[in-house]
Length: 81
Image (cartoon, rainbow, N blue to C red; front, side, top):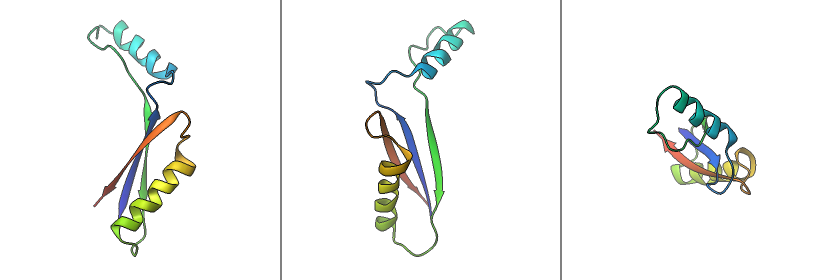
C-alpha cells in the first residue's frame, strides 16, 4: 500500500520561496498569477499487513510528529492503491 503526504505552510505563514516563484512568473509574462504557495510531498510505501484504517492512522501520526511542523505547516494524507 502507498500513502502520499502533502505538507505546506499555513496560509498565515510567510512563504518567501512562493513569493520568489510568483515574481519569476511575472517576469516571464504570466501576469495573471496572483499568488504561489510552495510545498512538498512524501510518497511512503507500507509493507503488506496492516489494514487501510490502521495505515491511515499511522501515516497521520508520522505526518504530525515527523514530516510537518504543525505550528507553521499543515498536511494532508492520501492513501493510494
